[in-house]
Image (cartoon, rainbow over all chains, first blue to last red; front, side):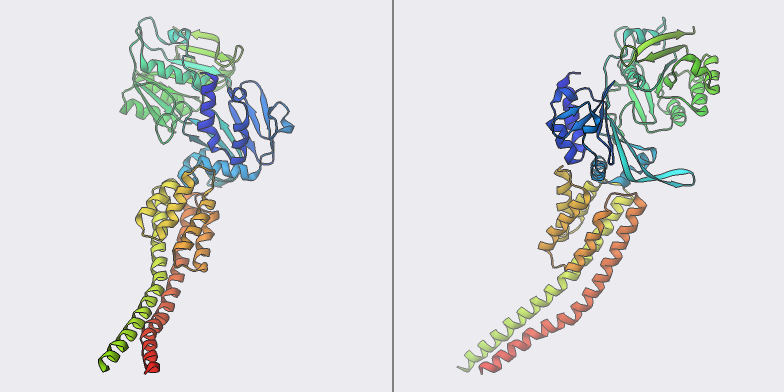
Length: 319
Length: 174
């Protein structure tokens, strides 16, 4: 994606939602300097912080982007309130379910995380009020980040799909990679038949759905169960949508693993991801140890940031 | 000559009477507007709490459901929010009330009740929204009741008053 394109995304999909004071400052900054930002963080009475892949910056009201955070604009309570009002179209009641989960996905698939005073009821989060922080994560589609090396790993020699697990610490590109895999599988190619894909998107990150419609390109034969619990979603997908492959992010709980087993037994392939640095770390978690030793997954791809996000460290094959 | 006087007398009495009657109708308008406003708020409440319609659309739909001048409040709010100038719902609402103030017969106390919504509108969960919108309807109903009592007293005064004034003028002239 070109820098101009990236700037358009920020200008059209992110800046209009910031409080007018902050939005104006961003619009004065030279577009080239903003091209790669991944996160905008606003915390009450703290400096505004912008992050790209490796660095963090501040936003000086006079000089623009600065490496010195202390010179950055100090975010007011009003900035936070106005930003939240804008992203929710002044309608927090319409986003109750999202707020309970701690974030709102806006058009374009960008995710806005929220923090503040939490109202609890019966050990569950009922609502968040008196917001204190907003964290905007810019959704980035990186097309063709699923290289032929990865795709060749996923397809077996007989053109069947192999169950594949992506393993890495956070921010190594698992979600971006899964999205691109979904797109490529769903589009098909001259060598590989297109597949029916179901994405179970518990945190609205893979497809970036806004009002239920995917905002990011996940391919023409992809159905998305948005903000659906993974285990329940995988089961209903198998029953209702006749997928050839189910893609879901961040397995972790016992019921997720059970659902994976059930899908595999039903003849549906699974491509998923998990938080861990190495296979050893994974094996320290009992649930994951069982999953790996059951050989449900034929491929494990370990990612890192050694050569930027999405670098392949190692591919483990069990077949 | 007597005919001439008769016609003049009738003209004076009937025109003063008509003036009184139209004045009496004006008093009834505020009551009607309050009632319309209460229905509109009830509609907005349903849009917000049951349908979870985003506020801008909820305003638009409410505007379509009611008549002038009450609809002006909601149209103005929706337009303000759609303009994308970073206005909050509260600010848009206050501007809407200004708009309504110019166009309607509502009194300052009626508008103050509406203004209390500015801090809450949209910015809490739906059970909270329901509570304050229901409270507002109750308050408007009280105003409506008061307006109706005032209306009953004043309306009589105006509608008879016009004719009586007409007769007094005629007597003075004779």
